[in-house]
Amino acid sequence: MTSPTFQSPVTNGYSPTPGAELTLTDQSNQGKMIVRAGAGTGARGALAQPFASSRVAGSVLIAGTRPDEWMILGPSDAVSSVVSSIPDAGHVSFVDWTHGRAMFRLTGNVASSALEKVCGLDWSDAMMPNGAVTSASVAKVTCDVIRNDEDDTPSYLILCDRSFGQYMFDALLDAGEEFTISAVV
Image: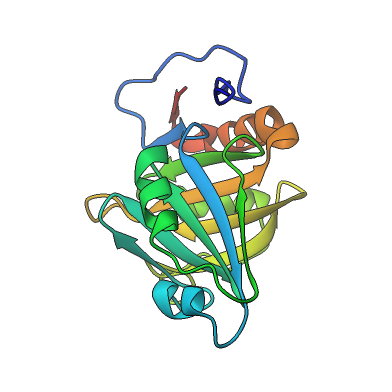
C-alpha cells in the first residue's frame, strides 16, 4: 500500500516579494508525529524534552507540546527514523499528523510584531525565547507555536488543523502586510 500524496492546504497562488521584512513559508509537507508517553515509559526517557520547550536533533525538531506529549517535526524520513528508535512499551502512542495539520514558518525581525496582531500572547524574547513552545489562539484558531530561530533571526512555526490552513496563511499574510511580507508556497 502506498502513502497518500501530500497536497498543501494552501491553494491560492502567491508571488514572493523581494526585500520583504517577513517571510511566510508553507511547510505543511514536513513530517509531523505526535508521541504520547506516560510516566515511567522508555519513550518518555528517550524523548527527554521538557514541556513548553524544544530542541533540534539532527534534522528534526522535538517539542514538548503538552505534559506527556511531544511533537516531532522535520523531513518525513528523518521523523520516521527518530520514531522507530523510541521504545513503545507501556502507555505510549504515536499519531502521524503529517496530512492532518498545516504548518507555517513566519520569519523576520518583526515576526513577533506581526503575531501580536493576531494573538494576545506576549511575544517578547523574555516570554517566548528561541526554543519555547506554546498553544494559543492565533487569528481565533487553536494553534501550537514553536519559536525556532533561523540564523539568529526570529522564526515561529505555527501549526493548526489542516482545514484552517488557507485561512491561517491568509491571516498571517494580512498581519504582516504593514511590514512587507513575502509568501513562499
